[in-house]
Length: 268
Ligand code: PGA
Image 1 (cartoon, rainbow, N blue to C red):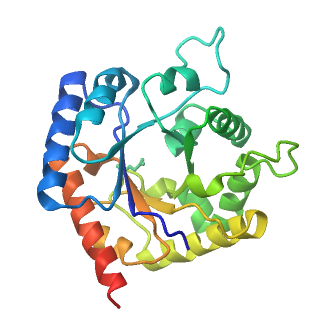
Image 2: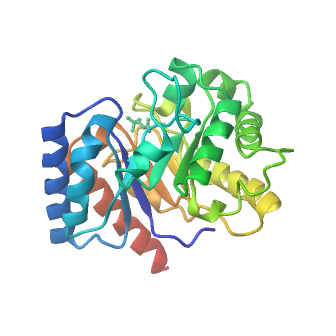
């Protein structure tokens, strides 16, 4: 089990202008300060266009809020119209990159091999990957969940690859288990089911890289209603939140309720 702070990652996807992003950060900083929920790791993944404006304001925030990209290209530079490199992200002080989100895989044809290349690029740039994996509804219904997750993990982490250093700092990454059918649907697996999958992910990583485990997050229709049930599970190290992270009040509520659940499990 990872001992890192509970993580709350807001994935804004293709939402928010610069002004809307700035207002969100101001509001969230204030809410976190007032509620004292500062023992969590809070990370915002805005659209690229809002990064230049958010990055300096995060430095002035009174609470600690990290910056993540939603995607990156694996090359450092070149003729890749519409793409962005790790160096460009680092210019903003961006420390994390979401890699392999199911929307990238399914809508933009990103393969497990590309996910692996992106992980290499992010590691070489000294940034932290938030690696997303998840099964489709069809795969789940055919009993293929673990074999799909295992394949995604194996290829992403470079099984048989000569780059032995890729996973050297894997405890600094995050792995997000996001069942595709749960994303944006209002449906979720039970916290018990998620805990079981998280254990399998942790065992997989421990068997290859020892017990220095990264936090494993859950993502898919996380809301104020279900966050406490998820965060009561010891193996759930945090959450990746889409729709419910778009309003500062609702994202803050998720953090507060999630931290409350973590505290209650610690007092047992
Ligand atoms: P959702 O998205 O919370 O809106 O389901 C989660 C995600 O895509 O990371």
